[in-house]
Length: 164
Image 1 (cartoon, rainbow, N blue to C red):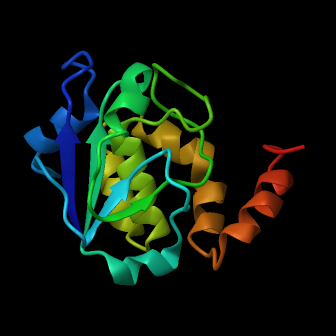
Image 2: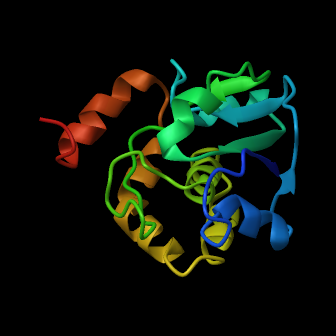
């Protein structure tokens, strides 16, 4: 699975996980998306499911500041737009906040859900806190990688105490 990042350069470059992914040749920069891209979009109506693997040949992480996310994601991106099921951030800036993931965390979670587990773990190994993201979400990621429909997510969240 090819990995791409579309960067808006809105955050501290020293903390930018997308920049580090490009630097280590884990991902490539892109300016546009295409119909075979999985475009990670936290505002999408649809959740990423394992069956989406057959519809895409690459993953695009949109790298922007969370403070400006609604602005960045208001742009029209071509491709299969999906949000991730709920996950806890492992990065130091948003540690343990639900769904406040870095681009690297989001792409790693996508890889895991789509069945590329080793690639997901290899990506996280590039970050000091990468193991923290995996430790916080290991069970959820395993459950999400078996999802057949979005309807199953609520019961998983209840089981892990993330939903009342």
